[in-house]
Length: 378
Ligand SMILES: Nc1nc2c(ncn2[C@@H]2O[C@H](COP(=O)(O)OP(=O)(O)OP(=O)(O)O)[C@@H](O)[C@H]2O)c(=O)[nH]1
Ligand SMILES: [Mg+2]
Image (cartoon, helix red, strand yellow):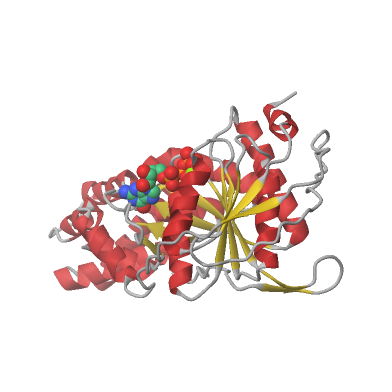
């Protein structure tokens, strides 16, 4: 029996909806457990009572508004001392650009994790433009570089986050359903932190949110999510049992979100199991169980910007099983490796939608290509 089955046969969790400061009324109810087509994955205990915990008494914090965070992104990048822009500009400003200079530019891009293909493309485009225009004046060189970097980051990609409730008609569930956001990624990349910050961002925009703690692998994971939820007054559906079936928790979170008519349900997942196959099986099952109830609006892959090639390898694996629709690049503060934005978008053909800029509760911003490039250029 593999570890996935071990987890499934532990039995169904008792789920608690932690209504944190928002006075969500929760009816105790009984519901059929989610089934799955994975052989041996059916659970035999079909009931999972949901219990309500009293709302926290402390008034929720007021998150920082979404507007203005782009500016912060630019400032943080500039302050992180990212040498990429400065080094490129220094070389480009030399009087006569030699073959060695162009190689230095390419090397600089590679060191910043831009990736071999995009780096070569950028150098070719710059060489061509410099040859045709003959620009050497610093302002013009900067503008040229800005233009080319922006083209690599691709401002035409749709980076909007699908957080609108969806209307379902036809068979099965009908009516307005919450937008479902599934958050995946390797352990330590910043999934739970990002969900907490995202909840704040959504609350600041006036959306109602519910969080599902489907990371049942680590005992403290649900507490961590509940703390984030509590701070901003967002309810959290969790299991009070370690090792509970994560797909059941995800299912119950969506059910609670639907019952309470929230706009967005965000589901946290584990980043580590005993092995990769187990993790991927588990994510696959969570995805199937959710999408049978309502379409999943976003599968967000959280990547740590400081992990370079490792991050790209992870991205490939997750994209295969989870159908990633957007990338969240965390820890962009204090890294000179911002080129990973370009590399990962190329690798997956999926846009970076959000970026993490620090450990603070409001250090998450929608990704803005222009602010990003300006930040790199300093
Ligand atoms: N500097 C910085 N730190 C971050 C950022 N995002 C997350 N972190 C930190 O990264 C660490 C791991 O974050 P978690 O949210 O617990 O990561 P996770 O992916 O949920 O990890 P698992 O639950 O173990 O899978 C924490 O210390 C966070 O504060 C960021 O944008 N910048
Ligand atoms: Mg986590």
